[in-house]
Image (cartoon, rainbow, N blue to C red; front, top):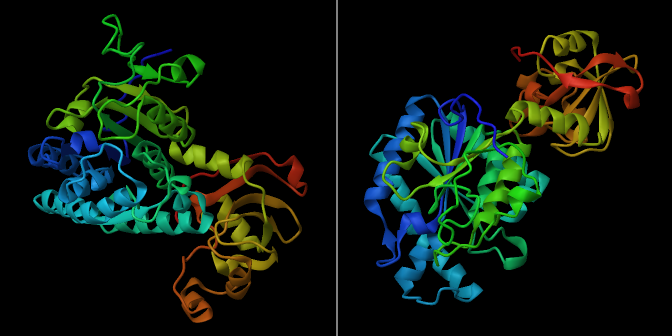
Length: 396
């Protein structure tokens, strides 16, 4: 069930997602933010940034804050009441995060998403691009489900799985779910004094999933089941995930220093998992034919630029998988196109600096970025015989 491995997946991570539940952030007696706790966590986030890590925050609390403001006392209000509470509470939540992060000279940006935004390919790509740009600009995204517009049928209903999808979206190395328990136990520790903490999990088999329980906080809607479902998403994306007790001050620092928690260890890295997904899970919707110079550059680990594209076949959208072939038909690999087939044809053969004039907007310099490209180990003219592997690192 648990084989302890070396290394600290938190401090070793390049990109980190932190999820905070309502029961930690909001004082149930007052309906207001636990200011001391939030300030302490902000100092932990500043320390992570000092280690050179990108940090994204998935924060619950908007509905709870809005309910307190509106005087709603029911544990489970009507959908319309929750949406109204979210509209009011989201303002307070964003302000709270802004204030505590600004004390460390950290700029934050608010992103509200729905289930559809992580399932719809175009919205997914747009959200990923926005998050990557925020990281590039040195900002910390604060993310929450857009409860003001989502209905029960099209929402996550918990931020555990949303956080895992965000981690998957941004190729995060580590996801931390702060909870009101120390992690995953062999039994419910509130009723079984012999329950023991499981330190590491390497596979989510039936015996692990059977340990899921229900939430008892009255504020959050997620229980252990949603956390294990989040672990499934994260581990498949090559992201290590921790469940740990977040009730004490500086919970991230304590976890970084080896504090209690359950680590779900991914077998692959985010980059490797993404490459495997591109290589095996996506059916190419078209083909781009490249010249000899571009083919050589791809084998050296470079991205595919429009200048090296000679022709475009098929009908595909931005973000779809496409075959990459040499002019003689040899399959070089497959990748995710940064442009639709229509726009790819317009910019094919042109320098990247001409993209804005050709399309009317400034898109990516690359037709296919090297991170979205998987090359063949032995090029073949038969796509069905292709054996794909990740290419070596190199400059665009």
